Amino acid sequence: MNIKPIGNRVIIKRSKHETQKNGLIIPANNKEKKSEGIVMAVGEGDMDKHGNYKKMLVKPGEKVLFNGYSGSIIPNEKDDDELIIMSHDDILAILK
Image (cartoon, rainbow, N blue to C red):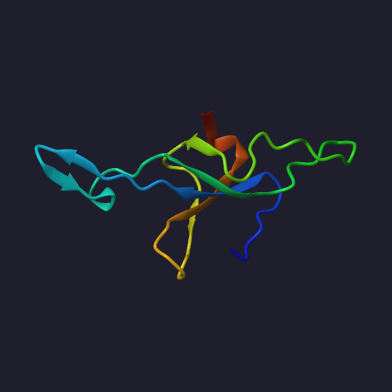
């Protein structure tokens, strides 16, 4: 990936899930989008009034839960993974 978020932005790869109901497999693109994913990249964080960067609470590789209606989709021609760039504040939790 040749993109680096700036400030307090993060890039997340949205998780794809297929569910099975009554023996039928329902593809992830045929239902409401999941609001969890993997952090792919993080910015350096916001700067405080002294010129120091605030620490980002997530790091690449962590699985997170985020606000499902936040961020902007990044066009991704290489594969069909959905990448989203969003504010660090839109992440609700780190999943363990």
